Length: 104
Image (cartoon, rainbow, N blue to C red; front, side, top):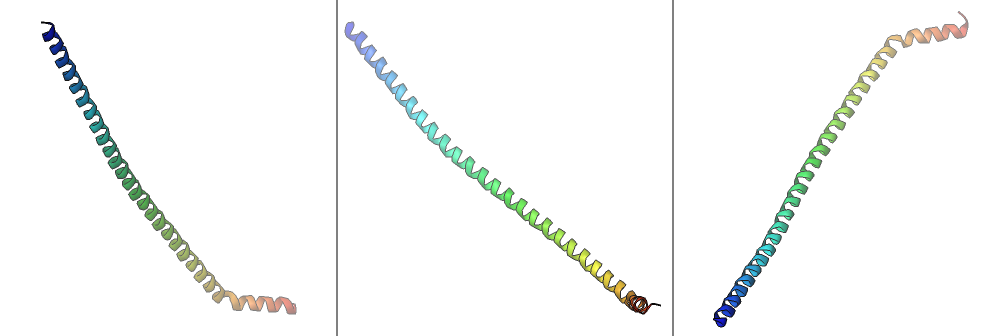
């Protein structure tokens, strides 16, 4: 009977070790899977972030170009207006300056 008890205790101990070993193997496997999943998540977040940064950069570049084009267009219009104003008035100004110099 003592032998049966000892044998039963040994079997229980072996079973407990087996359960503990399996649990440890499962823990390691889960930790490795978690690490792999975290790497994939980080890579996905980095990829998404880079895509968003590129999109914002492109939008910023487009907005800057649009503003530059607007400024250039406005400047051309103002210069054209100034040239027209000059062409329409330069003879009158020349006469006014000439008359002022000669005292008329």
